[in-house]
Length: 406
Image (cartoon, rainbow, N blue to C red; front, side):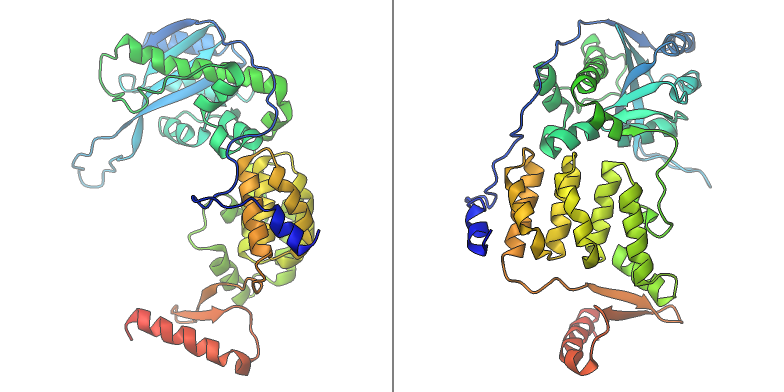
């Protein structure tokens, strides 16, 4: 395809600057039947919690949802740590025909549920796992085996289509009432309407799982999590799991300066991670790392990901190829302007505009290094001929001195 044809194939930008048709444009499987209303059990006493745990232990699939309340700040005594973030107010656990709504404010000891949560043979269903897992872990409940249905839905239909309300409308033609989403879950006693509202999310998560399992089992499998964490080489891991205190450019530059990394190893380790990682989220973060480090020679390795089964991998590959300035990918990226997922179409549009703008290839960002005394030094891009770059060096040094007030 010629440069002119590529430009003409790009969507025309509207007044909002978007120019990409919103929404999911693919085919949706037939809708399922909403589940009949089951029994809802309010659990506020230890003996009731033990009875609930006994019933849950017999189930192999449990949908879990949580409601939070903000911890009230109070003065702390010497050496005491006071929680200020969200804390668990309710825990809803739905199985076939029954939902237990646990009063986590009144019940300080949730340990009867530990065996259920930590059983690797029990599948826990969560819709947006992050915050629920964190708050449950603070109460001693660590989930061993779970599916994240929000992440599964995002892989299939895109970011804007993955909320529980959007998915229930798509899968079951159910309009989910979210009017009480921001209510005060610390009030007691809870009105029956609030208990029913809380139970409904868990019950419908269970129903959504059945629909996804019927029509998208492969996508569900990609978002299955167990106690075993996917492993990569040590220097890459912090950027996949969000534990690095500095950017990838800074961390890698310092590792190279200390002789801990070299270009050959960076490429080799990145290719190995691309070949072994399974989680779409981790693969998407790896693609961002490849773009941040400007691993241009990896561009051909990314072309197959333009046909990946998950939306975040397709969009991530498009964005990375655009940032790497890989002109050979224009034809294949152009085809993704017709992708069913909005996120991918938008990424393709942005990448093609960048590739068709005749810009100079993107250069490495200014990155700080450390001198032996611990102070910072600044290095711009790769080392080049000093005479050629002296003007640019003086420019950025002058700007830096101005920012520092020198």
